[in-house]
Length: 302
Length: 98
Image (cartoon, chains in turn green, purple):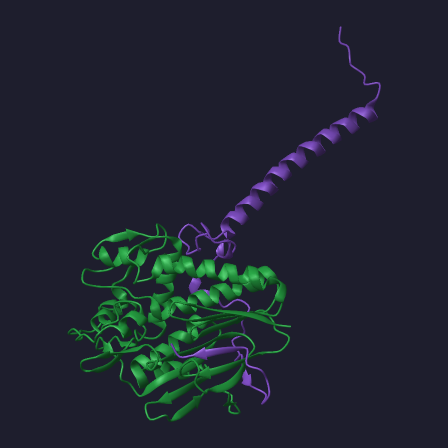
């Protein structure tokens, strides 16, 4: 028997599902506590976050918590894995595109013109000293860990909660899912471009399943709609072949790395995905769907 | 005058000498063995001073979890975890674009 709890955080839907209803309350409390810690460490919308301190003090090494070290570390791994398609140094580009506050605030205000952009400085510029827990970025650079922080949190929470309570756990934060433990039956998941839309149903036995899209977090600008997925090569919102990508991988971080890379850089990311052999479902601008590497062919409209 | 001490209990003396030798050997071997064990364990112990273990300051959910965040593949197979859903199966989660 499963039990789940759903709430809103980080401008997205969070859902925790366990196959032991007795532990749901404690597990939900632990997940909320972890998300609160991640928010305090890595939110770029909070002036008191550690990430804001790193961005404000660009040009010098800044002492940070082990948690932020982890989050920066995983963002650099994602950047390396994706060949730079998922780059944490797109912070300035995201701001230039107009995404400088919570997405609901950005949508609600009058459209303001976007600022000139330039290619991302590059993840290789980030200095991370794990031993003494310090992070440094060059002047003029700004970090944005939004691409990987949710997936990292889903991974960490699912693994820890499953181990602690000895049950199967499904953690869903926005489009990032992570299943841990051994459920009696695989979880049934609806994969959709946006919440509430018709999608396809698949089963998820273990690992991570993520969906990245440029159709969800978008806002009006004088030149049209902008969105939050930045192509690091140009510093502008991506306009590649696919508007949405869903990927399965052993972890949510890994799945998110590929799904984000496919939306951010399009076909440039396809080679790495093919080599990795992870199942993927891609939706092109015209709605054409491409399923790769063993994506369940019998998936149905949910 | 030369006197020769005669041990009235030669068997007992021999037993005591053997017992003493065995005790000394046990101590030496014990110290050596302990030293080797400590050496091996020290050599096998990874240097965690530069690791990326999550802080456990205010959230017990991460306090017992160690290791790099980028290698959290434990418990997961590299084989695909996806499958086809039954037509009437209730949906338990959603991966919606974000």
